[in-house]
Image (cartoon, rainbow over all chains, first blue to last red; front, side):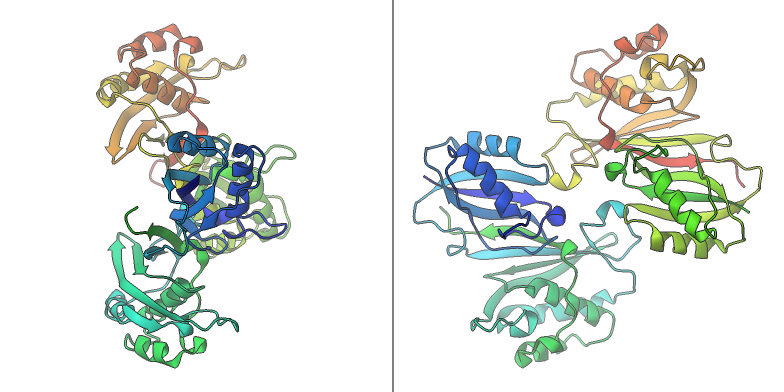
Length: 246
Length: 246
């Protein structure tokens, strides 16, 4: 039986999502619990994609196969009983055996939170604390240049083996909630560090170091050095993963 | 020179506020930093009162003496540079050498947060997660019985050496913000576990296990066994300490 689970995590204490030798990762913790629930047989989970160290998720997804058939709610409850408090399964549904949590993704949404107000120590691992003035109207005017289908090579870590840097951003927006600037990006896929590099660039635009239209030039250049600094991981959340109706 | 500092902390990683041998506490961390800033001479800090392990503060206060005269803002900045990210000095002001952060307290305010909605893993150390139904109107009708001057022996841990259990609560209230029930208690002083025992009792009233008027009987009984369970520490915040105008 194949299951699709939707889960949240606080990435603070983990070396990212993906399993690595001698590292505590989200994947390794979940797999160790499914191993126990699967009669001590290895279960591999296949997520919609990895997230880096200190990055959080409100709604990551992964599929996995279990030997016996479980009631979805019972499996969800059993996992939450066993998981540490910083990983939480929101739902589990049975899916077709051909379903794949990464290959079948239609869209993903990331959120990035910046606190431009006073330091709040209770959010030190959950927002990017930014202590300088930002011209929000400049960022507002820049963000829509990201929408559409572009080569995002300038906004990612270039990897020799990789050749496909084209992605579509359906919606790039920001909203202001009290002292927080909350960016939201909906796209068909995201390259490594892409959201954090985009946010870092938008912040430099807000600081007045770059003009909004520079986004067009950066995209065209395909040159990482043209974009801004990588924004820190703690402000980033994988918010939602979209699939076709199942 | 005597200074009064107002500071916030996340109590999650500490064995409470007060210095203890071989334990990481808020006081020991702050004193170790002041020791360095005071030319490697011991500085004792005197807080408005202790808080227990996992209890937080938005506005704890403490006074201390330094050998040399510091600019208040510079001292504040220097401390925040050196402190871990879960302790943060909000302000420092010079005070008279007769000022005492505990003896001169006029009032203190505590807040207690209960989440009656879905579990939010990002707040697992910052609210009491309560998964059952509560009759808020019952709690509303009970809370005002706490106001006034009472013997609060039934709501504290009885200590053989202690004889003074009388305290005045100026205001006891609660408000609802989305899925959160936020209690607030303003009083001239609070006994150990008093707020958590009051909240535990109010929750039992909200569950329908006790009637609102039971507060009067519990106060009169001076018997800890009559009150409810001690609510967990992670929902509790020392919000503000009040002094005469200085």
